[in-house]
Length: 165
Ligand SMILES: CC(C)(COP(=O)(O)OP(=O)(O)OC[C@H]1O[C@@H](n2cnc3c(N)ncnc32)[C@H](O)[C@@H]1OP(=O)(O)O)[C@@H](O)C(=O)NCCC(=O)NCCS
Image 1: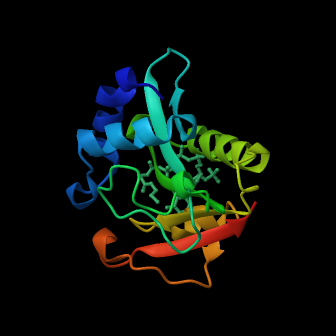
Image 2: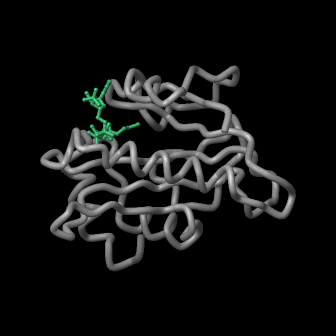
């Protein structure tokens, strides 16, 4: 993902999420600026941007709050990251069911397994499932984690899920 992708990313966010979950352009810009190696987009065959994934190294049990701009989540800046947190993955409604999300998630997990951070390797992947997506993530091996972070900014029904890398 680059800054030039943000208008299309914002458009997909508007189509994919209830307004309660919408993050600002400034928040997206902050995440991309803080974690440029961990933000991806996927295009359809015609070259139209159709899906995105914001991820970031973080500490297990310390996920970012909704709307967080990037640096306040126990990420790799302080050298303690042990999980790749998949913060936000969304696919344009017309492009769903074609495997774009699977491709993005698989790519992110492979990058997490390869990553060598200053203090060691990532052990986990984590995310906060919203909008009834727990069954989707279960298909990717994610289960409820042993830790229960404060998910209040994500509203009722949010679930913290993890899997080993
Ligand atoms: C969830 C989402 C990213 C999946 O995108 P996608 O590109 O359609 O996913 P894929 O093509 O990789 O996988 C499609 C498969 O997942 C299944 N699936 C999709 N959403 C699901 C859900 N909520 N629960 C269970 N299975 C689901 C589809 O039925 C399909 O199954 P099949 O392969 O057996 O046909 C997309 O529906 C989306 O953008 N949703 C809105 C944003 C959102 O809620 N993101 C997750 C927040 S944590």
